[in-house]
Length: 71
Length: 141
Image 1 (cartoon, chains in turn blue, green):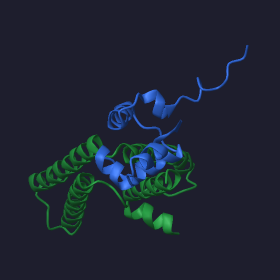
Image 2: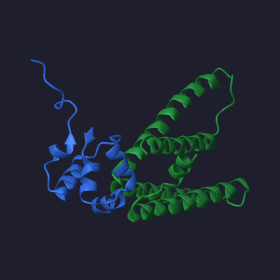
Image 3: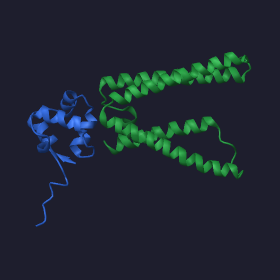
Image 4: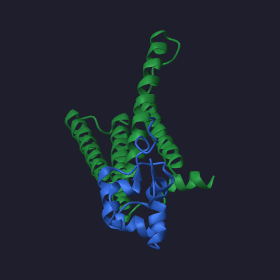
């Protein structure tokens, strides 16, 4: 699953370690989520959304519904 | 090579996870020592009284239960990606052991291989689990 986490994090001027500490996860988890190698759980996704004051769907991109629909 | 070393050393885990992991390691060492000591005492003939042998077995069992509970506590509070890596490694260890052991049993029944030693099965489980952890950490890094 793709996401805008890296962009958001840099907008806030936070390092990966800063974000990891705020979310109480490891820096490796942040790296993996940013690279799209690991999908955050629903509780963690909500935590991220609350931290950046944005809806989940504007941070995480659902690969199924983001594809253009055939007419 | 650096990625493998990082995977073995588990860099970057939150302090609470490291503390819980250390607790599991400590109990696992106590469990291993209690098992080795009990086996040594029985094999060397120093522990012959059946009640004492049963008591020693209960100590090993009790410490083993404590290891399991400490590991369960660790998993429940672990960083979520590391938890996934742990589950995948456990699944790999159990799966490979089941398949390997069942295959070995057929060959053993056909008398093509000698009877398998329990310590080999346990060591195999631990080694495969460790390999699973390293693979998981490298794959998600």
